[in-house]
Length: 335
Image 1 (cartoon, rainbow, N blue to C red):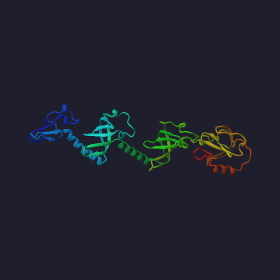
Image 2 (image 1 turned 60 degrees about the vertical axis):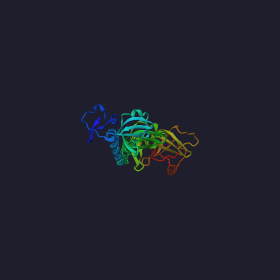
Image 3 (image 1 turned 30 degrees about the vertical axis):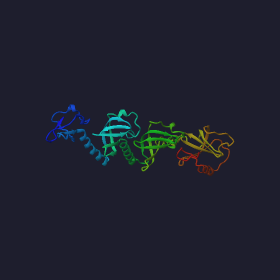
Image 4 (image 1 turned 90 degrees about the horizontal axis):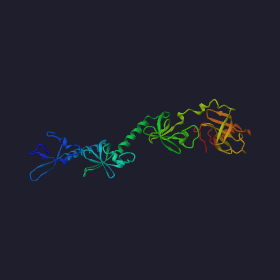
């Protein structure tokens, strides 16, 4: 192509000096292009022009500006190369595979033709080479989303979340940008050994915010506080002298700990069971409710009265042994 650049003669623009953004088949006489003079023939003074070099130079200036201002650049993936992909910025840019997403990317070929949102992480001024990262953009957006969520959290709030991970000690719930932990003791009023007894990955749950550390971005949650309280559900049966079926959950020489309803424990102190009898955890027994303190959620019961035990000794057992006599999780149960 011959291009008028305002000189004594037209400049020559070879097709190979067009960028990928320009289709030579669509060009017609009278169209305008931004070009640069990249060579002058010493013999006849012919100007050799380049549109792609002009675009690259202009883009390089924009890339430097974006880097200085920490701005996001959009670019399309054009090619898969060793270690990552190339993107078209108006010049070539390289995105390492580790900088494409927060998680590893499986098949890089699927990215060709897709637009990425990028930030510049390295510049080579001599070679006009640029390395970019989309992962940085995604991580910064995630941190901003976490902070926005933390700014709205309050203790006692009920929030909806998704169970994303299970551990031996509890379940992690995504609240929409930040994960919170439901400890096993807060998953259910009933005794559980593993969170999988209550929830599974992918479950949508309503949880109560128990406490949170805005600086550490840690949130403690409770699932059971968003559930009906077993003390309210079984209030009509929690009456002194009532006989109830129960399951032994702990055996010691001084007391037995039994579960009379899911999530409600009672202590059977020495004198209220036969010490010569063989008791085992998991064994079903019948108990008589002896005393109920709804305020402290402590219950004492009897399997078989064999001796008079002073009330103050029973209370001392509960305090010294740190035995929770009420709803599991409301008091410490020493194992």
